[in-house]
Amino acid sequence: MTAASKRQKREAYRASHVSTEGNAELPQKKLYRQRAHANPFSDHALQYPTSPSEMDWANHYPAFIDPNAQTQGGEQKEKPRPLTKNVTIADIGCGFGGLLVALSPLLPEELILGLEIRTQVTTYVHDRIQALRRQKPQPQHPSSSSSPSFSSAPAPPHSAIPPYQNISVLRTNSMKFLPNFFPRASLTHIFLCFPDPHFKARKHKARIVSSTLCAEYAFVLRPGGCIWTITDVEELAGWMESRLMAFGGAAAGGMGNYGLEGQEGMFEKVEVPEEGDEGGWEDKQVGMLVRCMREETEEGKKVTRNGGKKFVSVWRRRQDPPWPGE
Image (cartoon, rainbow, N blue to C red; front, side):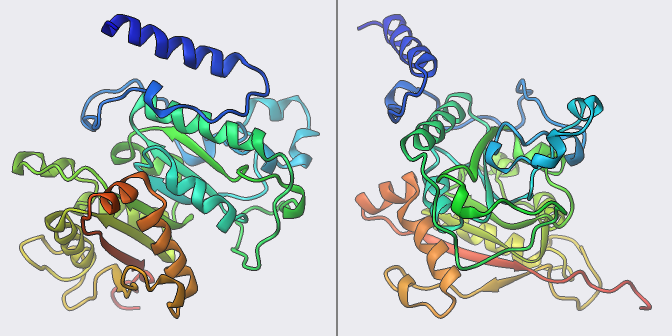
């Protein structure tokens, strides 16, 4: 089969998969061909809001649209339709959506967003979520835990919300536009699972953890929120740890002074369980989320099959330091 005929087959499959109303068949990954990596510095054709207040989340989370806002006058139609709660979890570089799908039933009270720069991968995750929603139209059971919501409108009862309504995916470049989607101190968790290691020294500037990007993560994370990282490249694990540890504190390792002299960094490291010990970990949420990163992501499964190592680290955002003189 020629390359042209393979491409036509993929396009025909995706067109039929989308056009079939009520189709609950999970998409076939092999028919969403995409290169392994994308250049984050290229000028991709991306759409993004000028500010988080301009972002319309209604198409992503239709089950969470504020019903009171829909009954207002025509002027409301020109504005983003508000939700009953805000997005609180971001999976940056979500890949084929394994973590999103795993977290949805575990955290039904959270709105979770996957961010991916590759076009076909984003399309695959979108089609996967839509198929899962059609497969399980019945409401999911409520969770015993709850997180604060920043919306004044009451959230709908979770017994009335079908599964997988709380996850979605968005094509964007997180290295450029993260603050365009999320306001200050709005996220509780940021996941960075198996990011591109960019082995060459001249490519290190494209790594997803850097001094500059740490500032953006600290901006969108609320105090007490966490950054969760996992990789199978030990050198990259050390790189990410050194940047997160140094950010916000006194000058360390030649990285510059981002805070007051003697001040601790903006992030503190959280102890995580060894692989296989997640279930008995004292902090149940840490154990649960670390297990999901190790076992539910596509890359995590691949590393397990190949007998590789997984390097996990969790970083909790500290409270903002007081202004000098306070």
